Image 1: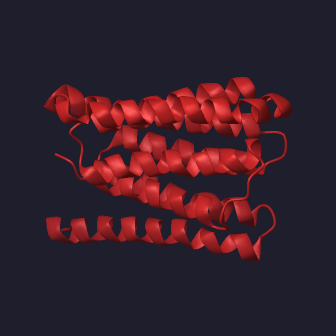
Image 2: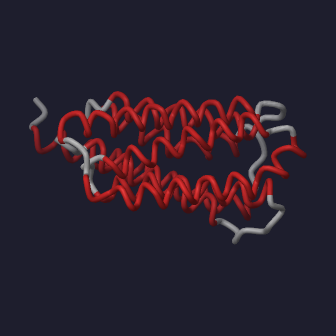
Length: 214
């Protein structure tokens, strides 16, 4: 018979394994494994984090993590970039649902409105900056829809009374995607490893903080 303390230790080890796997993919910027090993390594950590969320009975959080893992793979496959963006968009809707559940239970954080305004202003400004590059690549519609969805997710996180770590995770996720957009649509270089480091950190923060809330 498994004692509650042993079960807790096992699930914590699952989280640690997922976090280490996710962060380890940072090395792929230098190793550059070929398919299918590169995509498999890329999604493995987030898949394990999703299993951890399932072990904590955090179904919507797990859905967001597993959809993110699917997006990680789709982005690596030729011709499936838009499908990868769609998978991440759905993931953010799952995360937003988790934060909306916190709002429904605990109410709004009334002190968060100035931060919400700042996020919306930054999102609009970035959208205007990226618009020419999005038009050139033919990704104006999916990129704009995605930006709206992730902005909704971050705003919902900020307005909730979720743990601060979860709010930071949501904001850092948006930062990670902004770095990708700067490279893709603005043609500006970003520090090597910065996209994956911020992405893995965001997913790890969300997985830990949202699966352990009451």
